[in-house]
Image (cartoon, rainbow, N blue to C red; front, side, top):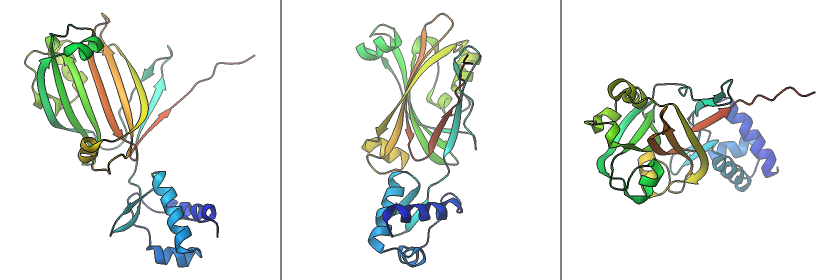
Length: 236
């Protein structure tokens, strides 16, 4: 049996199993699928690279945990609204909280002076108790006097900015690109070093066009999925 055929049979086997469920042993799979062990291992390696199975040394092979799905839908004006991701509400765990001068690079990014104070926060975002992403948030300190690290662990950040500080997000520009985790990110997310990930960069402005937030987020590539709905204009 060829590797591609073995992969297709394994895919059908995965489809009828629950997320995170263990697959039979390699010996059992080899016998039931009628495929050699080397070919089976090669097919499993392909599925692991695609994020469809997880291979754990000494434990076996498991179907991937369910992906957290988020849909980006355009408004009538062509902009994108971001609804909450599906599933259990997200939780936040504070990793670090500092107030420090912006410096040249971040000052330019947030359109403030290098000496202006900046609130810098790193927090881990969790779904179903599992780490999903690392957020590195920067907010000009002038907008949020008295804010604490605890504030970033409870409720909505944008809700807090609006209700306590009357800082209202009007719109944002967000980019997404593939990346891999470094050692610190891998440790926080509980994934192997250099695991596939998604890098989000977001710059948020208020109605006066001032930058109120700049965030870089690293999302697990094996657990997070984005769907974008496209609407095509009528053609003659």
